[in-house]
Each structure stands twice: as structure tokens, then as C-alpha cells.
Length: 354
Image 1 (cartoon, helix red, strand yellow):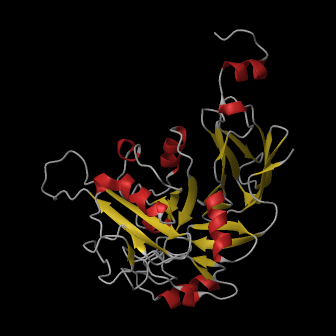
Image 2 (cartoon, rainbow, N blue to C red):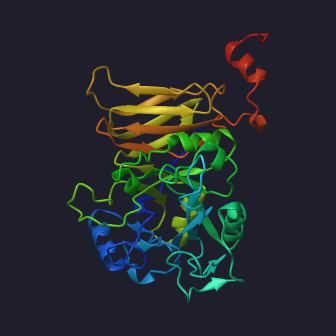
Image 3 (cartoon, one colour):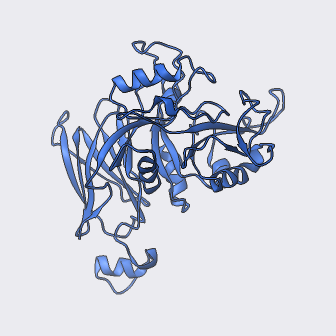
């Protein structure tokens, strides 16, 4: 029986889910952002200005949709002169309103660029790095999805994000930070979280502020995007696709088909140099052509059920651009997800584990 990891029906809609405008620290108006993104084939844009939750329904038309969201910052507030062995802990997260609401939960009027007249739910809330999980939980209970933004720019390491909870997705690529010299391709953060049982999706974004024009080599737009598979370009349909993981993240390469059948993973793509299947353990695999420079458009990987408590696909086009599928947990649907001696015996037909 075929198990689709991307829906076989529906349409792909190109999206940037992290974007800044003149309403915070970006250089372009929302209207101009729509214009430049629509010209380049985007159908979905979330203008996530800092600490400001603003609806942009006026941008919507039959071929373009605005998702209501904002970016929140949380800091430990160390002074630069503190004699600490590490950086000042900081976390940025994006929230997306599932119901297209502009009422901000956990509103803190003291935050950088916060609107004094922000529509909000409940009492004001003193936001703190040390109350991150509570902050995320309370906000998501009011109907929001939360992403973990640019962990490399934030200098986050494992001991910091190991205890963070409530993320629906992690930015595996933040192109704006990438253009500024940060190695913001964060697969290691993703795998750290997945291997600890956190079922998070991946997203690629621009986080654009547009300090340079679109023809400048330091332009921070159009480099990281999500391809969302949905039946319609409607708010509820796009949110549902995000919640279900019916999308992939990319810097350019395309995933056209992705499914499991008879204990094999099948991948069909745009022309790329390499197709990787990555997993929980040390069983990652790669497909490529026979000679350097050869391009391929499909691959098949055997899933043995021993090291693949989760699997995910990565594409590399040979020119520095990647694409990432969503993780698939327990791909062979082993009972209760038990990957132990019984699985080993089944695969290798042995009676004894040494």
C-alpha cells in the first residue's frame, strides 16, 4: 500500500513565512512586498513584523494570500560587560494565527517595536527568556502555530534548545541570516530535536528586511521558501496544510513526489546532483549519477526499520542550494514504534543478539 508523504492531489503554493516591512524594521511597505514576491511566483506571504500582530487582508486576491503573524523576541537581558563565559541567551519565534486573528496573546507593551494600541487577549504579560515554554504554550492555546527562528544567528546551542517545547517547525534555512555570513542551514538543530522525540516540521524563510535592492548580491529576498500543497488558496486550507506537514522547504530544488511503498522510499525531483535519505541513526543514504556533474530526478531507498525511527529527504542541486522534506516518523509503522531486538531479528534472520 502506498503511503504518501506529500499529498498526491492539490496545488503547490510558494510561500515566504518570515518577512519584515516598514511597520517594524523592514524597508518596504506591505504593498511593495506583495508586488515583488508575486512577480517571482509566490502565492503566500506572512509579514511577521517584530512584536506587532497586524492583519494584511487588504493584500489578498485570487492568486495571493497573506497569513497573519508576528515575530516575538525573548532575551535573558545580560549586559555586555557581564563576565559570562557564553553569549546572552536570546530566542526569536514566529507565531501564525490559525484563525486570522490580530488579537495578540501574552502582549508585552515594553518589547522592542511593540504597538501601544495592540489588540490583545487577556492581561499584559511580562515576557522573559526563562518563561519561554509558558509563553509558547499560552499563545498556542489561543490559536497560533510557533516556529523556532534562526538558531545559528541566536547562538543557540543544544543545552539551550534541548528543553524548549511547543514548536510546530524549525527554520532549517533562514536566508536573510545566511546572506549576512551566518551558516544558517540548521539541519543539526533539526536532528537534535527529532532524536529527542520532538515531532517538528521544517521551514525555509527569507527573514527579509530589504536593506539592499533586489538586484544586489546582498538582497535577502527570494532565497528560502516553502512549497505548500493544498486544495485551495484559502486561509484555512493553507493553515491545515501547514499543521499536517503538507509542504517542503527549499532554496531552489523541487520535490515532485514522495511516498513509501513495499518498504521503499520513492523520491521524484527536479534535476539535482544528489538525493539523500537521512534518518534517526547512522543509516543515511545517498543517490547520485555515475559521474561528477551528472543530474538525477528520482531515487529509491530501502527502509529496513532498524535505524529509521524517522526519515527525511534532502536534495542538493550541485550549485549550493538545498531542499528538505518534512520528517516522517515510524515510516514502516512498526507496532508502538518499537525499534529493538525483534526488528533486528526480522531483518537479519538471526536468533541471538550479541
